[in-house]
Structure formats: structure tokens, C-alpha cells
Image 1: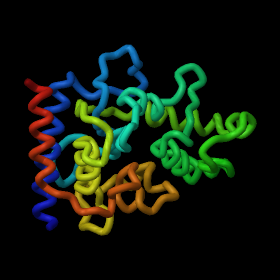
Image 2: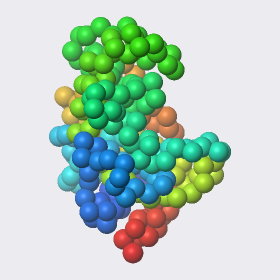
Image 3: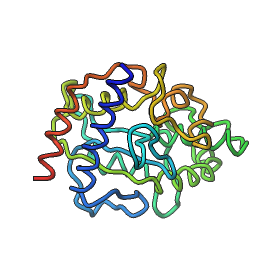
Image 4: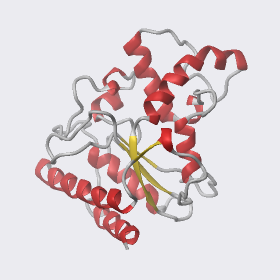
Length: 233
């Protein structure tokens, strides 16, 4: 399994390198806005700072995979999801209750810096005074996520359980995850995620919670490669 996973990871990164070249390179959310030409729907792949691969070759390792609108009737577009992770431009803040990515990065910062934010992650909404008390941490989360390079793949299928976007997301996460597996491309000792309060984040080496304990189907790499070929023309 370990040897097979290693080869699949090497192939996975090779495909992502082709995608990165096709879209003109990785971007950071700090430099992105809604007026850019975004596909309606897609899958995104985030990297982070000095987090580099150690087993599958040279280059950055992926630290989060995500998509959007997987439930039937879902209307969220790719940029809408990315902008929620990015946060608000003017205030520098954001809404961690609308982004699990923001929420778990925030918990890592709380543990790392020893700050007290007792309402962080509570409820699906919050009163104005609660949000005001959290703005310092929201800004810190925005700063970190906005600096992460990411690439995206256009997959313009309809929301629903059969979505190809969902298939790519869950299999990519399961492949990358080190949860209960011999570690491949493990995070560095100073990776921020090691301070996260979610053991699934710490054990997987990813800013993901879902699918990290699942098995992947290597056949998804064929689908991924074909989707990337459409982008490269």
C-alpha cells in the first residue's frame, strides 16, 4: 500500500504541475478578486509557506483540498467559496463560521499564541459584540490564508452526490492524508497545523477534516489527468 501510494502521489503531483503551468502559475488570495476570470465551479489546492515535499520529489506539498456546492441545488460558485476563505478586504476580518478552513486555522493560532477567544467556533452565527471580540483573530487568520499559494481546476458539473468535483476532492484528500498511514511528505515540525485542536488535522498533515481517514481509488487520477488535459488544450 505504501509503495503504491508513493507512486500515486508522485503521479498526482505531476498532474498538478501540469495544471499549474496551464493556468499561468499559482496565485495567492491576497492578489485575487471577483473580477478575475474564474470558472463557475471547480476544485482548489492550497500550499503553505515552507511546507515542501520530502518523499515524492521537489516542490511544495498540498495542505488543503476543497470544492463547493456538493449538495443538490447548491448555488455557491468557486470564487464565492474562495472569497469566504480569504475574508473581507476592507476590515481584514472574515467569518470563520462560514469557513471550516478559517475556523481550524484559528484554533491553531489560539494554541500557538496562547490567546483567549472563548466564542471561537461557537454557533452558526454571532452577535455584533461577539464578532468585534473575535476580529483580531479573524484578521490573523486572513493574513495566513491569503498568503497561501493555490491552484484551481475547472470542473463545471452540477451539484449533487455524483459530482466529479466531489470525487476529485475526497480522493485527493484521502491520498494526501497521513492519517493512520506510514507518513509520506509529512509536515515540518514547525507547521502551524501541529497546534490545531483537531487531531484529524494534526494526524493527516492537512487543513482538512473530512475524508482524511478514507481509502482512495487510484482510478481518480485518470479522471484528474483528463480534466487537466482539457485545461492545457
